[in-house]
Image 1 (cartoon, helix red, strand yellow):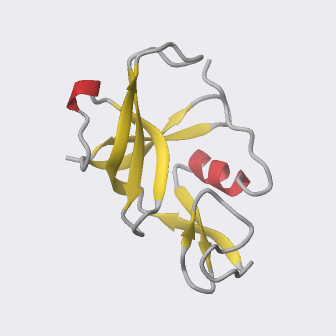
Image 2 (cartoon, rainbow, N blue to C red):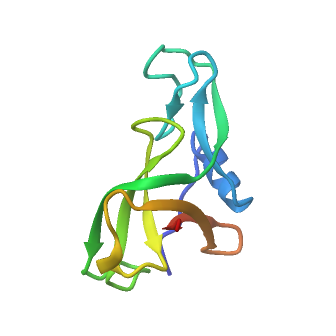
Length: 131
């Protein structure tokens, strides 16, 4: 069984959106900067007027690593990716790429979010090759 997220006040919106198969990222309502990981205030303008905003889930692989060591809930080898989301330069999400062999993963590869059920009420965001 894979480790499941432990939502808190700042991250519950993210996990609730994943259960609806939506990707939501916190966004400043004053200057429109996306903020990930979530924080109570904008790092650019300092505003505390922040809230969840839906994003496309499309992006490109910025970096990746192929994990060969066993990790609870994951069978090696698997590929952990750092994805640049298209909504904003530097807006990145760490996840896993699915349905792609590790040797086929490349920096700059276009990807899109897909959701997989991890338990009765938990869905996790993964990324798949966008051909």
